[in-house]
Image (cartoon, rainbow, N blue to C red; front, side, top):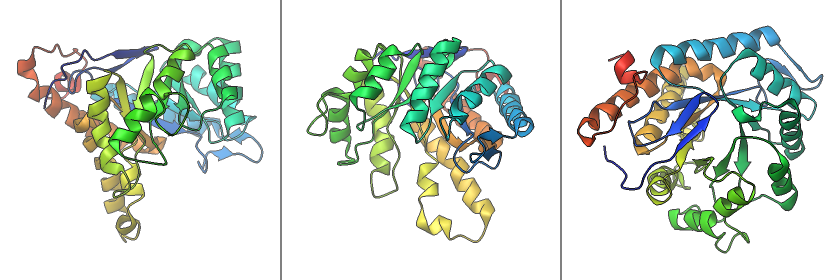
Length: 308
């Protein structure tokens, strides 16, 4: 592996640290719960199966405690009514941090307001500041009392590395202001988790993985990546008759992210965690072993110390 010359920022969110040099800290697993289409969610009646949700949360914590990989729960509120219920449930059933997320912007606003009102914002990240952000969302983020934010750095007009760096710094020819200045204006300072946004191979996937190293070299930010978007958009794999092959490719894609500079992994459905954590731990051990002569201190609970 290699060591970044720039000092690497550590994002502390609740009881979890994200960031550092490749191999330095355990990769943080970020599974998604209550997502659109999740079998445990009844979005028509704005309810979910609490027993199954608790079992899934416990499963994630058990495997992550075993491997030494911290976890952050990505909580999707499919509707405005579900959002506060989902956030409260996760806050009550784990001491780990969590992320406000939804495809519906109004549901995200509800999440920000509710989190501020109930007072657990020091455990919360928001997903995400991106090139579609508008003034109303900026105001909502500025007023919210949460710990940090995800910057989704995908540029839908130009997926190249250069264009996506422009988008971060000054907006380029795409938006009026860069995503990093926007995050700072909202009050997050360096409490930023950078996600390049992974597209299909041939449409920017390679640039997404390159951006992990570029962003860490340029700004030192903690990084995260949804590497599973590569196999999920792979036409050949979708048609493969063996579901095991599809699942293996989905899980193994995470190691590409880790060795490219990702400090955390958006692994998709929470059900994937039981396989994603061991595969991440394996990559973490190799990465940590490769930097032994860099003088980097490895924490005691790192997978290389727990499992090797």
